[in-house]
Length: 297
Picture 1 (tube, rainbow, N blue to C red):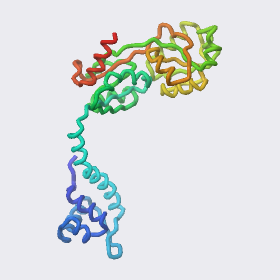
Picture 2 (cartoon, one colour):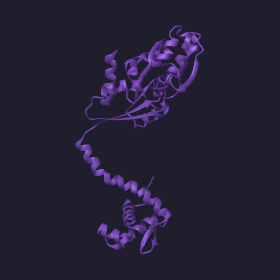
Picture 3 (cartoon, rainbow, N blue to C red):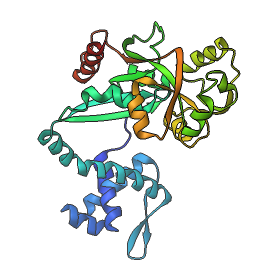
Picture 4 (tube, rainbow, N blue to C red):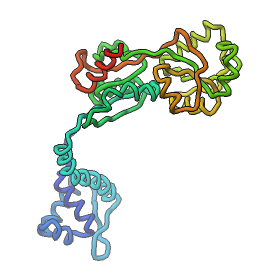
């Protein structure tokens, strides 16, 4: 869209508004009062609204001027920070990785998947958590370098995305010591009696868990469903219910939460994927993630 005003005119207005008058602004800018006044009038003409009004011996902002000033503040404060940003970029080189994290992916798993790049000395890691489809859209627009997910990218003729497997993990049931003790004897039938916490249907593993219950003819006593995996584990730790988790992070789970392993969820696995826009990955840190995954299998 074509800009209908001159940023130089906006800058003069911004200085006038900050200084509280055209004379003081002219002194600060080392310009003639008439020149500054003409520049501000030109901005008002291009915007179609008066931005300043007389107030005693000085000037005050109109409603339109207040709105313009708020935007100008953001614009020129960013501009004032530009030299420092450029200097920092040159003096402190960084390797940037913008990763989209599907909200169905357990946080402890994300930490383990990212481990291969954490030792990069100049790493600048940007993690964006969100819904799977939204992240794929950002990936296609090159706002993200990679998306980590619990499911592969869907087939889409309009968007070329490539799925790279990062591994899989069996799932087990965990819970507080008291719940594990009461559920141990008749497990897994006991899951019809003890309270159960589950991820919501937005995760790929939920369908597999539902099939597992059907296979074992167990009608689970579900007392909670969570989109956020960390929140699920926090409530599980409190004794609200037993919950499923990837065995891949068993040690980390027990270290972070006061829970115990109840038993296996045989036949159920969580799968982990990296999704990108290139069949042959070019980003060096994404390459490290894939190479570490290949070496582990």
